[in-house]
Image 1 (cartoon, rainbow, N blue to C red):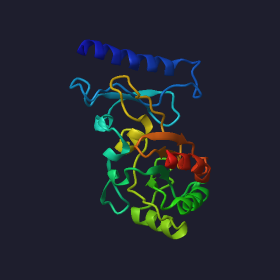
Image 2 (spheres, rainbow, N blue to C red):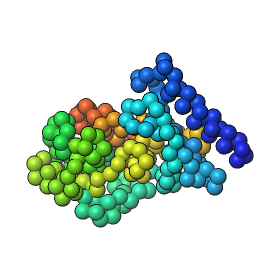
Image 3 (cartoon, rainbow, N blue to C red):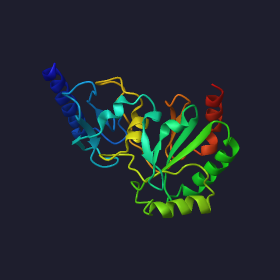
Image 4 (tube, rainbow, N blue to C red):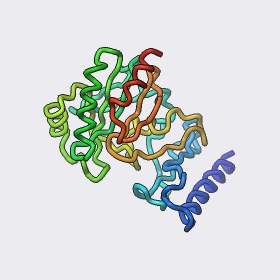
Length: 239
């Protein structure tokens, strides 16, 4: 069994490497950004390896050891504990039964003003309706969230009147991806070679809509206005 799994892993990696080296391959090709070959039920693959692009939009692949793969044992977003902007632990189970909009935010992006403004408008419209926005600052995209947690908090709350929860700064791609973002990008795992293909976050203000059962319902591009998601949110609230 172990030999079979190791062979499958080697074949997977070699196949992806050959695809990346192909001169006919270019960035628009449909190549998964994150391929897991780990199963949490197997000691052989626990703490296994993943193929991850060496850098955003790169064709070259590297094999990277990934820790914390117990993310695949998570059944919903409620299974995670994160740090808030004041670095206090927050168990996301406190949001059970609510529809969630999870957003990676940044203070110095061309999308900052429009998204923060529309997030505030959306929150005001749906506040008190079993809905919550969870904002996760991230500095991975052109260094557009360089401030301290306190600076980020003051920026969002003073300038844009953010009343929704803002959390500790996180990575959403790469080796140090926050476990909750691994879950958001992959959904529930079904084991080895299950639902393990995750597309990297492309930019600031990528949005994930999570239903009342803690499952990812839909992912939205950074250019999608939060107000454009209102219809989907209301449909989930009625479900």
